[in-house]
Structure formats: structure tokens, C-alpha cells
Image (tube, rainbow, N blue to C red; front, side, top):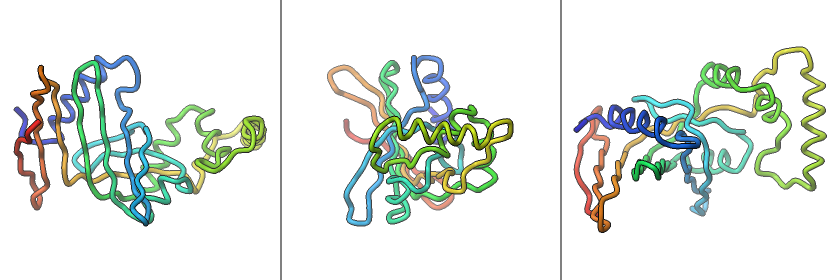
Length: 192
């Protein structure tokens, strides 16, 4: 049994990449606004390590507004085929511009253009409006590189709690909780 939650996550994530048919890096991201109203949505994990779990998004959308008002979040990975879950809770910080630039450059061109064309989370009168904006952005950057929009970038969830949940028969599940303690971690079990 690993006593380092990041090593254990690496092991479970490798197994998920081998077993899950779609998006093993999909995670539910829960945020809350300044009034404490929660919101949850699926995002994709794009980096992880001892410094946290990274995802990217439009920084003018709802999740960014929630994080600006309340820089705490929770993540949930659910790997149904493995009958496992990982829950992560902690503070959120912006990823560096260099990190955001590097990830943005690795995206497909259409994904890069979509980042420019979308007013994420804002009302859209018709799909054709978005498609027209996408075509305008295509023309704008035709023949050249697509730079990262100034309103788009990464966030890092720096965990203070990581729970590993394994399904067991008769709902007698195993739950291992790692909690940050100074520069290290304490580990314990939770009742199912």
C-alpha cells in the first residue's frame, strides 16, 4: 500500500487510462460562488503531481468567477470500470502563464480557435452565432499560429485532502483518506 497519495494516484490513474473506454482524465469539478451556491461540471485533468491537479478553462466563465470569489474546489474522478473513485479537496491557484501557453500550444487548432470564439457560460442566442464567430476567428488566424487568449488559462487544485474509494461487495467499501499535515500527509480509513 502506498503511503504517498500522489504515488497512489499515479498508480490508479495508469490503471484507469488502460481500462476506461473514454476520458479517464475526466473529473467533476465542484466550486461555490461568494454566496456559497455550489456548482459542479466535468472538466479534464491536464496535469498532476505533488504540486496539485491542473485543468484549463476560459477565465471569464462561471467556474472562474466562482474561483475568484472562493478559491477552494473539490474534484471527483469516477472510474466505473475499475469500481474506484478519488476525491480531492483544496485551495485553487492559477497555473503560470508559461504553463498555460505550453498546454494551449499542444491543443488541436480547432480547440485553440474555439477558445477564442467562445464566451463560455454566457447565454447564446443560436448555435449559428457561435459558428459564425468560429469562422471569423478561423479567418483571423488563417495561415499563422493561434496564440493563447489572454482570458484563457489553467488552474491548479492544491489538495489538503485526497480520498481513495474502492467498491466492495454489499456496500462494504474501502475508503482511505490522506490529509495534509505540514509538509507531509496523515493517512487513515473512513467507514463506508
